Amino acid sequence: MTKYSYSLLVCCVLLFSGCQSIEQLSIDYMLPAEVSFPSALRRVAVVNNMPPIPDNKLILEENDEKKKDETEIARKTKYFNGDGKIATESLAEALANENYFDEVIICDSALRAHDMIPRESSLSKEEVEKLTQSLDADFLIALENVQMRSIRKIEYLPEWGVYAGTLDLKVYPTVKVYLPQRNGPMVTVNASDSIFWDHAAPSMAQAGAGLISEKEMLREASEFAGTIPVSHMLPHWKTASRYLFTGGSVNMRDAAVFVREDNWDKAIELWKQTYEKKKKGKQKMYAAYNIALGYEMQDSIHTAEEWALKAQKVAYDVDKIDEKKTQEGVDLMDIPNYFAITRYLNELQERKEGMTRLNAQMERFKNDF
Image 1 (cartoon, one colour):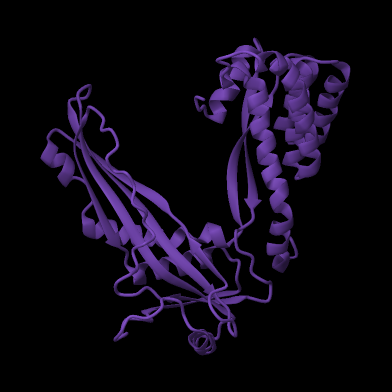
Image 2: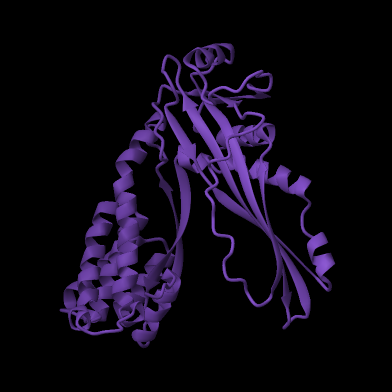
């Protein structure tokens, strides 16, 4: 099935709904981390446990022989180890900037720099206890590995008459969390993310030469590597787009005015009037969707989900899902209302499912967030 973005499908809703108007809004909300730290853990020491020659099993062999674009002239793939000192400093700074722990202490000297023989990368129970005592920390977060995979490409863009050099770098940091008096790490976080550079020039040589140097790339990428695991370990904010239906009736237009005044309660009252007045159809669907959005904006996620389910049920009939189930070649573009509302419902359910974990993770702040 063809993939479409949420924004595109919302635009399709408008096309199918005639004169219906829509406004885009932004919402910021917090998502829970994958790792939960007891509230008693308030002082963390960030240490550099990256070996001189890391284990390079993290980067899975990827098929680099994808079909090349007609414009592509050359490509080169290389693998690198990151700078453990830079990545550790970046990790400590990123953790400190979140203000989640009372204190973040850094020990960026390589713990394994003087190893005479290879050993297990994980810190031993004795090492953890010694480090937490000497650094006066409750627990440790250790950078264990940073691997990188770069793809440099040169393309010729005939419509512009220029050569474009690109560098796509994927970064794979690994961190482990250690608690005193515990054998082995509490948790291991293997994360990844990408950064990208490009440069256009009149010649192939200039396009390649204009890209970032390997030395500078490794420095910037190592800094970037330290920031990647933080969203996996700490609660973090997300900015998302939401869509408000504002036309089709006096109530819908008046409600939009209340929204601009940040008076969601009054807006919800008007949308509920429209929902109750209409027995079926798009106006009933839009009203239910807007009510869900109104409750989400007030952090009433459970109530928002209830109204999103009502909107989805009406959308099911509006888009004639039962009829289209028996048809061949039905695409998402044929059920834009149902698809867009279902996507929104899924986001609400994701938020609801994470609320218990988020509340536990924010207990140290008395859930003031």
